[in-house]
Image 1 (tube, rainbow, N blue to C red):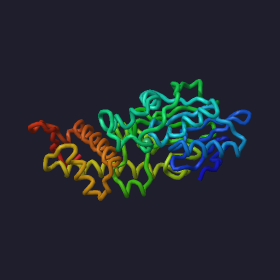
Image 2 (cartoon, rainbow, N blue to C red; image 1 turned 180 degrees about the vertical axis):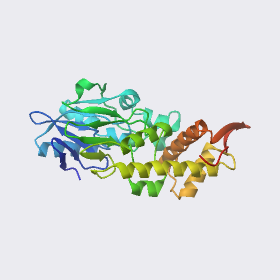
Image 3 (cartoon, rainbow, N blue to C red; image 1 turned 135 degrees about the horizontal axis):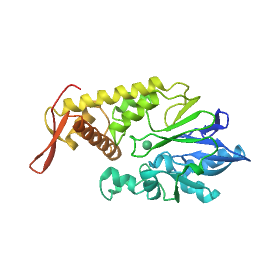
Image 4 (tube, rainbow, N blue to C red; image 1 turned 90 degrees about the vertical axis):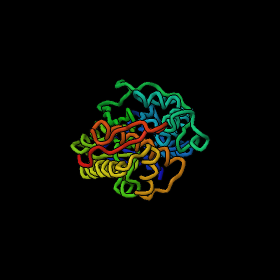
Length: 296
Ligand SMILES: [Zn+2]
C-alpha cells in the first residue's frame, strides 16, 4: 500500500483503498488522478511522492465521491497544488456536503455526515484541457455519477475511476452504486470496446484487457433489472423495493448501504420506467412501482 507503481512510461499509480493515479511530468513534478479516501491517505500519498522525488502539480478528480477527494485538502494545503473537476463533479467537490445531501435528498442525518460520505472542504477549480499534461485526454464516463470522467495518457494508460466494479464486488453486492443506469450502460459498452496499454480503475486491479470485465458488469446490470421487475410484480414503494433487494441479495443493512443502494434502486426504477418495464402510480400518499412487462 502507498507505494508508487509504474504502469507504463510516465504513467503509474499509488495503491490505496481508492487507487491514486500519478503521471510524471517535467522536472520532478506529477499530476495526480484523485487523492485518496481520507486526510490520512492524502498524507501517505504525499510521502510516497516524496520517496519518488515528485511534487504534485495538480489533482484531476474523476468524480466527487468522498473516497476520491478525501486527500484533496491536505495535499493542496501542504503543496499549494490545485484540484480540478468537471460539471456536477466540480460543484460537489467544491461543496462536499452535496454528496450525502444528494444521497439523502436533504440536509443529511448525522449518521451520514462522516468521512465515508463527506470529505473535507477544499478549493477546486474547473477542469479544462489546458490543465492536462501533454497528450492526455479527458474521457467522459457518466453513470456511476452524473459527470464522472476518466483520463487517457500519452503512454496509453487509461484511468477509469469507478466506471466498473470487480467481479468480487458484483458477486457480493450486485447493486453497484449508479445514479443513471442508461448512461452507466453506455459507458460500460464504450469501455468494452476501448483500446489501451493498461486500464487502471480505482477499485479493480489494473489490467491489460478490460473487455470481459466490462461485459460482466453489463450482464450484471440486466440481471439486477430483471430481479427488480420481478420484485415489483407485487407493487411496492421504492423503499420497499430496496428492502426486498437487501433481502434478496443478502446485503447487510447499514445507514450508508441503505442510502447508496436506495439511490441505485431509484436510478434503476427511473430507467426501467423509461424502458416501459415498470410504472409508478400514487396509492394514498405513497408512490408505488408495478411491473408492466417481465421480459426485455
Ligand atoms: Zn464512486
